[in-house]
Length: 398
Image (cartoon, rainbow, N blue to C red; front, side, top):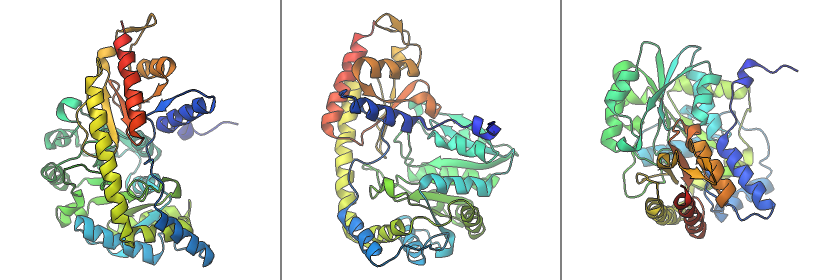
C-alpha cells in the first residue's frame, strides 16, 4: 500500500526514540543513564489524582464541549490573568489533548500552503514537522551559544518577507533552556506588530525558571495580543505528562477555528483529565508542589552545568529555564574513539551510548548539529554518574 507524500516527509520524534531505546537497553539489564526524557520525574501530586478518582466516582465520563469544560476554561483564563496579566474570555480558550495538539491546531488555523513561518534554531524538533504538515515553509534563524541561543530584533526583521505568516517563539526554550528577558521579548513584539506577523508562543515551561523573570509576549499591549496564540499545558508545571492536557489562548476568531479543527480530529480532551486539571489549577497545594519541584530542578541545573563545564572538550551556556542544557560537542569532531573518527554530533551520541551507556539527544534533530541536548529531569545520582561517564569518554578520545 502506498502511503501519502505527506507521511513520507514526516520524521519521527528522535527524543521519544532515544528514550525508548534507553528503556529497552535497561530492560536487557544494561546500566544505561538516559538524559533524553522531556518530562519531570515527579509523580502527579496526590490532590490531582484524588480529584480524578472523585470525577470517576461521580460518573463524569461523558463527552464534554470540544474546547473544554466551562469550568476548566474559566480556570485557565483566571490563571492567565493572574500569572501573565492578560485577560481572556473562556471562549478564547481551547483545551486540547496535549501541548502538541494545541500547537498543531494553531498551525492549521493560521498557515496556508506556501506561507513562511520563522523558526529560531535550536528548535524543538516537532515545530518544523507541524509547519510542513500545514503546508507552510520553514524559515530558520540560526543562533549559537555565543549569543545564548537568542534571536535579536535585527535577526527577526531580516527574516521577514511578504510571505511571512507567523513566528514560533519558545520561552523558556526547549531545547536550550534559555529565557528571554522582558526587554528582549518586548523588542521582538515590536517587530512582529510592525509587520503584522502572528506569533505562536509556546509557554509550556513558563513556571520552570530559575532566578529570572518570565513575561509572556502577549502581555506587551493589545496589538501584540491580537497577533498571539499562547500554547501551553499541564504536563510540565504539574508533572501531568501522561494525562495529555494542553490549552491555548487566542483571538476569538482563531480560537473558534482551532476548536472547529479539533472537532474533526479528537473532539474533546479526556473528561477525567479535564476535571483533574481544574483541580490542579484551583487547589492551593499546587503552589507548594511547584515551589518544591523548581527548587529541585534548580539544584540539578547548577550541578549539571558545573559537571559539563569540567568535562574535557565540552562547553555550554548556563540554562535559566525548563530542564535542558545544550552542550557544544564540536571540539570532539575529528577525534577518534576506538580508532573510529567522530565526525558529527550523531557519531558522538552513537559512540557515547555504545561505549559508555549514556543516552543523550543529537542536536542535529534540533537544527543544531554542533550540540547535544541533556535533560536534567532525573535524579542527582544519575546526573553525577552520567556526567562522570561522559567526562571519561571525552577524555579517552584521541
